[in-house]
Length: 167
Image 1 (cartoon, rainbow, N blue to C red):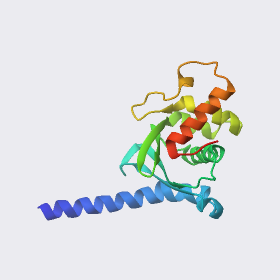
Image 2 (cartoon, rainbow, N blue to C red; image 1 turned 135 degrees about the vertical axis):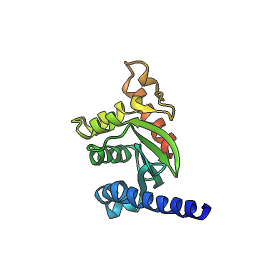
Image 3 (cartoon, rainbow, N blue to C red; image 1 turned 90 degrees about the vertical axis):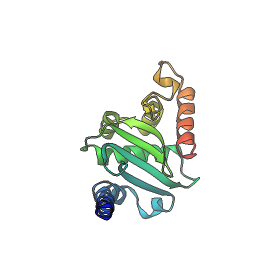
């Protein structure tokens, strides 16, 4: 009985890995990661815990120090375009397997169709960043009227805390 349960568990895990690979990881990385970018950024995209379709994880495994916040923000916008037709609650932002932040799924889908410039997306994204409990992380989320310098400080802090990057 234990052997059957063990074998069934192994089969379920293998199927989960293939399902994640073919439904999320491969389609997104094939579109987003060109050979030059692949030398600088390694990402994995999967459902949380392989089977939780409510949360999609964008896991940065390797980020070159030459990559700046603007490039990573562009990557998030590009990922949102690939996920626009998927139904999910949160996009979990992770680094090397360690979940750091979340973005609301509706915000991610809206970002895909946003006409905003990259600078505008960069400055308005930090207030949308949530901790793993679902609470806003940055002060811009609690009050408006931040100066552009304060908004860009939040951008730097967000990228630094997520993967160690900077503007």
